[in-house]
Length: 383
Image 1 (tube, rainbow, N blue to C red):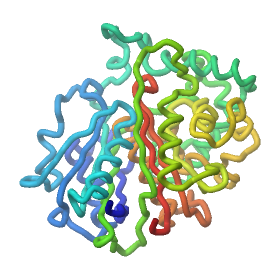
Image 2: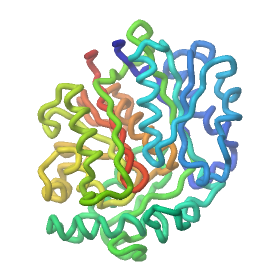
Image 3: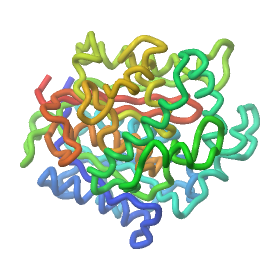
Image 4: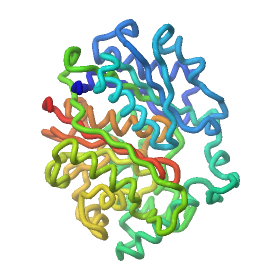
């Protein structure tokens, strides 16, 4: 198996509306930045892997049909990955598999979403046969799970607020983040409108336009102006929408993916051995829930890590240093942003939200009604 390295990372500026760019233009902005970081051009790339959220989110069927020329892929393989909200992470993993399997030597992968040209709330609300109805968007689906977590763990009601403030404060150190709220405070979050009890307006992610891109290569091509991030392991898991005894507060697919990931990377104590993580937290309460799901602590203990400041930028286990999904959420790209930000940390490229001395970092994504999980570990040292 070939070693896989990330030598190029590119992100757009994220915003509620990028009216200055079409969808192909948005992808090119991220892709060209990743290629510049890698000191390569489109001509050097063997294949392109793209990912975005369900077509109904943007109202454009099969956008990959018109992306081949925009991404320099004419005459080369191009493919699309589709795993709902986790797709950005899954897309990066598919690209890494093309390298590690020896199929290609240099792969460009790009994930994107232009939510300003769509209505994701509408797309998530209709009744679909044989599936539980989301009733009023993703928040309507996940709010009961958060209530269940609070009851199960005896977590105090202010924990979600702490995450909302922390991630927005981190975003102030990230010039590409969509939301910059310098006045953010607990009072501001707690006075924002209640949308789906217990989720308030400022406990929610925004709707963003943006794209992220990565250049992945085998060991022979792991040369770039900035030292590479090495893929130490990657895992994807899925589970059915409905089955008897399904635990959506602590999904089995997430636990299984994390176990597989740690096994690949030789991690036996994630809390001590992983320096920082970018987790897919679209609603604030999912930080403590994922800390437990990913094995950073025992069940019922996640909220205590948040409350104790362990997950702060200067804490023992920083989470969502970039501001996370709570500050930037082009859905189809959100997973790849998590993966890219993890790689930036171990390359020392994160600027003001850099974790000093980060050597191993996690990128994580999930999608659907917690049906799809994707995650990777990257490190500064070659495995």
